[in-house]
Length: 629
Image (cartoon, rainbow, N blue to C red):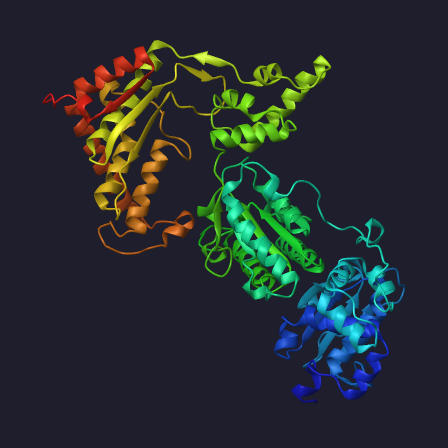
């Protein structure tokens, strides 16, 4: 039996081996690249037994085979035989008729399998492999060191960067050329099957303001890393995009890849689940392949949509085992990926609360960037962008009438506008924009009165809370012929800033948000669904404030911090915590009900006036003394 050291990967090579590879620059480069690819494996770091498969370029198989032998033995001459050695290197080349029978059950053995194609691996080897890895491209430092050690002239950093971004055949051809000054790194030298994307940079796109700060810092750090001025471990290279469907999360991700000049690799939990026959092994294999594809690029942005569909180990269903294995594998891969220089991870979800907590904790997807619906100004800018720069000032009066459109809605509208112009055989005109707008429907009197009571309920509660001086109320007498929920009016006010937010201030915000529904309930004994049913609605606002009060600010029955307020969207309240949230909502519902009952006459008179005039500007003097009802 050999000792443990006899089968350990060597972290150093002998002087004789080094003398050999100085004469073989391709093997030297392959050795550096292979060490970097395997450095995170248990076999390399812990000298553990096992099988590691590395997938390399077909033309470089021989070099990587020799590099693997040096990595296992460290010696110029070493025997790699299943009978006489505790380690072995096996080469499997696609298209070869040679049959490989790999003994995977040898004690303390370390085996490196070198292949050029995943499909060339037998099912036995795939199952036996502890790791299946695509080798990294060489780094700029690798190229410069190899050229220096083999006596070639120095090359500029930018030239070395272009070389490592090229195809392996190009690296093969140019690595040892004495001078690269006259080489034109054009499209003919671009990597084959490169997933680089073209299009507008993130900084050139309208909207998406919430992402720009993080993306700008990332772009700066990325530049410094490329120039060798910043270690990759200091780059903030992962984030989670949160927002409703259609706000542009995928567009944002691809535009960020263009901004950084790196490969864009989009995938999703749904794609992984649909791989093969959908079995657990198929999904895990597809997941690993996505990460390895990102790792195989010089630099890449791996975009994972539907992150909430990965699974959650807290779920107690008949699929618990499946979800646990998927989450564990995902956590393993992301932990490794954070150490891969040049790889950016970007997740996306519209349901952050369903994401496994370990995925979004500090050290993983800890940056949560919320992309909301476009502001009125952004709506016009986005539509103008899709129309090729049609004047924004002409568009905005029309887009201001839209009911909270997403970026996708505006893009769809731009296609209709272009279609109108094509049909008329001319460039886009304002009439085409007007014709693309949804029809407006007049509200019947009963709906107007209900909407007026709802908005005046908000206004009275706001003016009575002690934090608001004046309020503007608007009533919309028409709505869009649209499938999405719409509001019949709007209340605008500012709450006075205080040096410290108090419980009374937060409760006032909850009470004001609930007051519209309370006013309807008092006036008609049958409130509508207005003010509820969607993110951003009155009911959603009240619930979120109450949730923060209990879980982050300690205003529940027990003054306790359950979750950092920055992570609250992924927090699932326990039954006791939910009861505390419910208590605040019910108390402020009753407080709003008592106030509006006492201000019954004021509520009715203001609502009638709003129906007639369409808008009101109110202050405390407009509230009549309590009628005693």
